[in-house]
Length: 511
Image 1: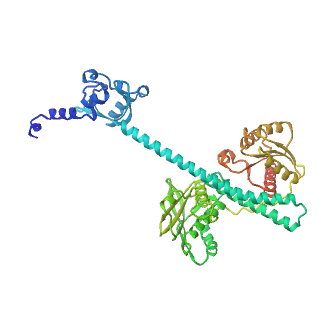
Image 2: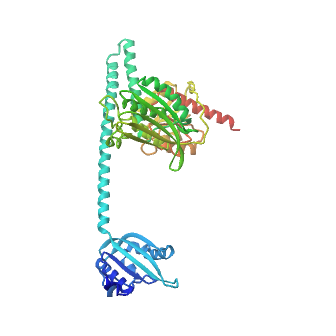
Image 3: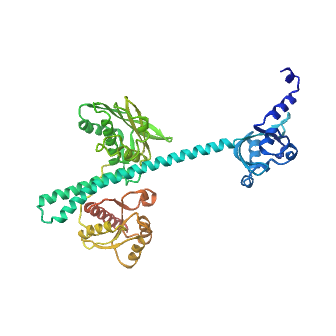
């Protein structure tokens, strides 16, 4: 120790710098030329002191960084902000690349004049490769989990739809083979087909909600009022073993959402809570004001005092068709519908759970400043004017034939086209009163077709049909009337009647 103290401070500092071999520590002049060189720099850059002194430090940079003027920008940043820090590829004397962490500090003399830069560089190539390997492993794991989820989704869809198709196929086959069966029996088979179709529609809606592609009808509702009314209904449904409590703190609780999807989400949440409390318990429905992504929101809480959820199950809770229930006791689509509904409404859903204590589902929905929506009365079913000339555009032959028959039964004169380009040709050669088109088609889709018609013939009404509304969620689809698949004669007749009535009203208003 006494030997070190006998040396001057300058000698001690020189010993310190020359003893460090894991870091390149050297000085640059004000222009960026190398003024000092330590053993660490020589070790992993490959240049001796005599070879490098006086050379510009930019010789260590890659051609890409030189083209971007990174050496110059680094020095200017260090002088302006009193420090530059960064990572990147550098070149050794033999041309090989290595990844570095670099720091540059400006040096000033006693009078405050800038005299150069202090440069410290560390070779962290091994760390870089380790991080890349870890990220690659994470990506592979994520991809594996996606494939597993896709497999479960595919299997679940196939299983549920095969069950539904079994009923429809069996009933329709029996009807075709027994045309003279009693009317009461025929009616039962037809009702079975109708009921099964409704269940298939519900299953599709759950899947679309999970993928955020469901066609929504947003209205402004007060969540606290909705939950207050909802609580009375589910109280009767759940029975006495489960006590329902309300904790409605959000004031105001106005959100703009699809009311049907909200009710479906709440029902799914309540049914899950009920299943978690087989021996009874306490179910709490609550609202509170909160923020999501810095914006005001309303949080809906559905809490139970049930068995709770394990961490491994919690991580997969929102996956479609994932369920821990016995076969036949659940589809695995309830929580996925909630996830999709919340996401499509601009919010999110979260689950908090403790085994043996209970579970809380939280649905965060953006607040709105709009006023409560007035109830919209059901449209009157009215007859269409006979002889209405309709251009039907649908690429699926079965759907095209079905829709054409519906329109013909409404006394429409129907012309069909299989895709958008053919429809445009027909519109230019024949007169029509209405265009009814599917949205998703190869080539020119329904939305593009509607936009072209609007630009060329603004007086031509257009009705669009879709199984999901992903293409229509943007601004371009707001000017067109849309019916959701599956549709029936009543839905189609009312939609066409509404469009024609709206056109007549606009014609009267126009002088």
